[in-house]
Length: 126
Image (tube, rainbow, N blue to C red; front, side, top):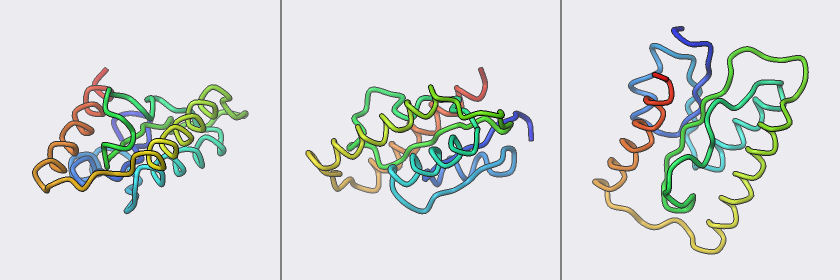
């Protein structure tokens, strides 16, 4: 491991490019499942290192999300991380309920994979 972090993602591109370098948990599911897994880590005293709703893309429009979690655990739950992930889950649920998830073409899905990966790659490199 290069960095003390855990990557939680449903993005196949992120999985392919990061799984040999970082601890990665791949979620074969939707964005809400990624966020719920991140929340599970927060409940185990890990911290969020990236904002779950990073980017200007609405949560119902992008089918891929990656969240970086601290690898090391604290002795207490980080309430800021818990509030952030709970609010991200609520916001995503609301957008999905109100607007649904568009049916994207394969090319657009690939673009979303690249956008999500690029955001996370740049966050890791900082």
